Length: 470
Image (cartoon, rainbow, N blue to C red; front, side):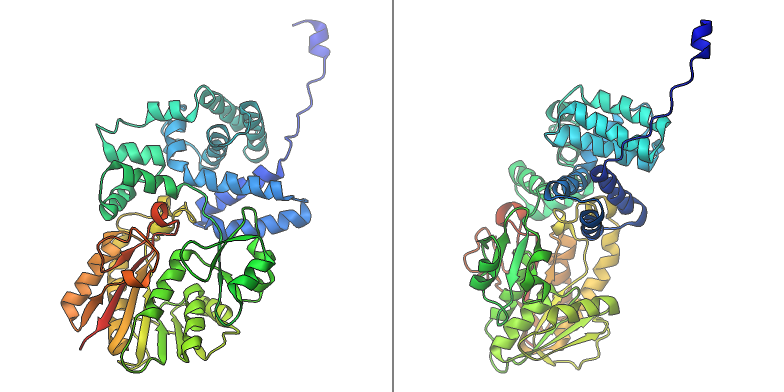
């Protein structure tokens, strides 16, 4: 080294450029990983804060949202690709590093961001949150990923369908293998149907509004915001892309709400089953967080009926109270355990139990749930679901109707639960639910109804209607 080179001062350390959009996306991913948080709960308050303090515009919020949800939805696929680009098992890569790599992989393989910009921005993020040393590792891995597009990578990392169909679909469509198997069993049929379902799980769901009867009409709600009519529910409107529900006055004051059409249809179906005799006392036995209770309460008010909304968790019961506030008819909200109910047997004419479940029917909205759930989780849900349905059948009068609902198509949470309870306890018969979904096609052979994202554009809601006979 020359004397001149030895005397040259070292280059000052360059401070990384902070990109607020990618920093926010990384923060959400860390909350999901570290705290088992849900992105749909963590992201909105961070976006509001960023609008106020960082001057976020609509396009910034849209990019942050795409980075978060796109990365979570395609996590399994990106893990397989990243694994092919590193020299160690993924479990030995620090989780924050893997989150940054996944964000970069999504920009490279799942967006239209130019590769050089995706790599540069992700490496800058790595410098800011991981340090210079690990940023070099991120840079090296991302440059390997840029060698091929997504289709070429999938051809390399996914096993052939003919060799292992479930593993092939798991990698191609970014679902755990056990979830692929469970959904395929519930759906039935061949390859085309399951591929369409898995692909639908990876699409961005529309935001659907509900105009609560007696509080606001569909026409009035449509006049206040850019929407399209719902596909199936007479109370549904689909919010235009980029629309913000929280900015709508009728949503803020509770006259309208955000509610998937599948959820609306379940409440409407239960309300429309004909009954002989009185029809004045309705129960929502698992009411939190309150979407179905608010619609049921409005429908009950139109019939001159009163709704009792029961929720075990006090904080969720408070959410139900907020959703029902201003309901046009009589209602009451209580915090009570539906498996040990405080009400007398035969107290109600209609009962809804939308039971706690795995949530496999809402993977479009909560993509992280697919990675968080395990097959053994169903062992814990099963006894609770059976207990709630058993008590619901006791709560309804003879001749009354129970609606058993789940946001999961898993057979162990749907038909198996219903069949087990009816066989063990008797005194109930299934009612064909399909006539109470007017205009909705592809409802299968009945008597229960299973909705599907790829067929109906809704969450995969399940409903069995049971009339108490003794």
